[in-house]
Image (cartoon, rainbow, N blue to C red; front, side, top):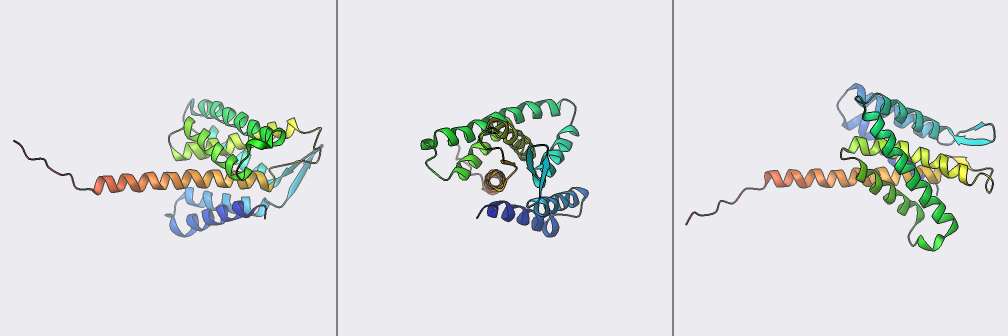
Length: 198
């Protein structure tokens, strides 16, 4: 079922933001963003000959707003890394379209892991990786849609297949960050053995 990964991820994000996080402005924004994404996923907007999911519009412009409000010159680095991720996304989708023999696992999972790997190479902080993932994924979807516009004129920007791949990628990044965090916590709590002096 298309959209299952997307709905699971954003419902889990909304539950975590509403019931587990401290009451801050960021928590309210995250909960509202999750609800906007869930409620707008099934709606489409037609601009000229382009069909676009409303959730794609919400994701792209909210991530643009966050990128612009970063520290000075941080938005430039984010724009460059997001462009690199966009071309990596479009290249993978075109490869899967024209030479599908290379897709030996589920295409959405491979695409999600591919985007998670690329965003991890560009940034260290998890917040920057997720922002790069959102910006680069949306831009890559636009590049891919423009490439196949003549072959598939009814293609919908930000369809459930795109949102599922994005949710898989974000989940992979969060799981990896959680594993890294808990391993560092265990390392700090481990007692240091003293060696005897001869």
